[in-house]
Length: 440
Image: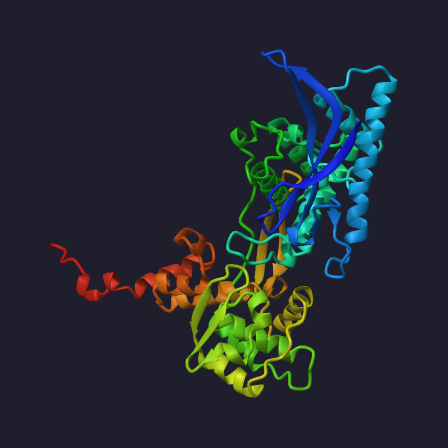
């Protein structure tokens, strides 16, 4: 008698993959002439914390602690129904049923009936697997290798890529499987994105997510593309026209009288704090009184999970005192970026900047004013560049910025050739006492 059982891959882990095992009285004769019964075993693409799994019922426990249990169990029920229907049809059509042929027919059914993202989710279908990872990430079941939860921007980048891949599947009229993700796919997909006039960095972002997903699948023993590790997908990118704000420009922003503008004033003040602490947006949001300790700020960063100790700049102390130790609420990243451009315009930070980008494989030049390029992240570049220009040792700055390598850190240094020359003139090497005596 044929039947489906669901089992956890590893009940000792925080998150376990759920496998389906289909038994249908199939056996082979071994070299000793004995029957060896074989089963079809495949991943459902679903993952669960074992504490929510009912081993006896082979379903998720019906508990308020896991409110998605009805939908989750329905997806498992659908898998049970589909595999049984496919099996019976093969028997009715007098087809040879082996674990291999049954799996092929099962996958064909999924593709034919457009069962990609809708349940059941099958991990050999690439976009379905990405959706599984997105769902896990949203539920907080996936964490980084440092034990920190993924940020919303990570989920956003995953979602953007899966949407792009779904559009590409419509273009090629085919659902992508792991075995399709090879160098031919890479070249065709990059060309497709170029033809749609995407920027180099947008294309690079999609490729990066695809590589991440393939690696996750490989770690879970789900990846059918065995040669993926040998395939080099170049993560395409180009240097963006990012800026930093000089001390003089930060002073202009600080000088603005925004006392009657309750919309812009707190944004300006929190941005200035970021410019003198190098805190990321996610850390700026969690900054509170407990993090201030005498002459330093000590805070565990969201992105890296590291605790950093930041010297308390006089500007930060002044803003902190201004709000009587209760800092303003940080608004959304998008809104803050929008308001910062408005603040920059009011402060007349309007130097012309020429932006060069590659879009659709062609170089595009655009003239913008500097305030249009100000974002929350400009604060980190401003801190790194201004402290570097002031002669603070690179190793000391890196201990605060959290950059692991000097190469990564130096990408944050946004000085011009003139500024670099002026900095070098301050070095003892250029001191007059080092002049060589020229023979007359």
